[in-house]
Amino acid sequence: MLNKNTHILNEAVITITSDWGNRDYYRAAVEGALLKRIPGCRIIAVSHEISCFDMLEASYTLRNAWQNFPDGSIHIMAVRSEASIEHQHVLVVYGNHYFIGADNGIFGLLFDEKPEKIIAIDIHQDSSVFTFPSRDVFVPVAAHISEGKNIEELGQVQTSFKEHIPYKPVIEKDLIKGIVIHIDRYGNAITNITQAQFKKIAKNRRFEIQTNRNSVNRVVEAYDDVPEGEMLAVFGSTGLLEIAINQGRAKDLLGVKFKDTIRIEFE
Image (cartoon, one colour):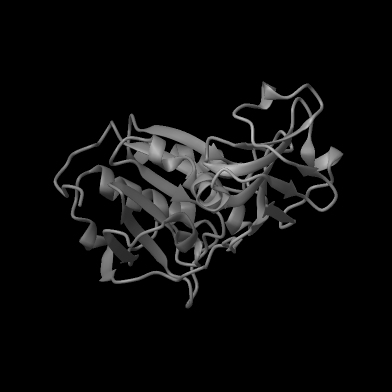
């Protein structure tokens, strides 16, 4: 557990993951409020280009980014952030990091293990408007944390958050069946099949990785291991199996889409 007395004012690292885009004022308003409340803090955009209201994309993006930040970092999840009777605002402490967002299932997609602490946030927000919690609730919470105050002053401790069970591959003796969980900017199709799962079933056997209309029978270590324009399979920086085309877009050229089934058949 983090030391509640640690003073990180003016050194706070605060990330924001949102679906705001860059056209509207939302990003600037939240960043300005953070700088006003926590002068000198460092604000990092994980992404402001999450598809609107897409918790799966938001959780995938933050899940693969947060561990690269120093201990004590504060992560604001601004996708589907409004509170309701069913989905209250929470502060979650996990892996020596702080996560602020709505308890709508997104934290169940972010973490593999039980967090160190969960606080149901109960504070007076900074305005009478209830449609902008990232500015009016999450910023004051981030300031409270950065000042080294006791986080239990923010609300009641609770023992769990709402679960949103992530998609898991089907694994059999001679088959792994997964799905595409993300299409990145390059058109690469990232699946939910991990390298560890693949190695456990493969056992040096020959195999074929199948999309809806194409296949490949080897996994390479880098995109440039195949000629330009050729289909490939690779375990990327996330540790997940990717279907890609070297210098091309698998999404367009192979017709691979979000939630498409990916099969690996072993001999």
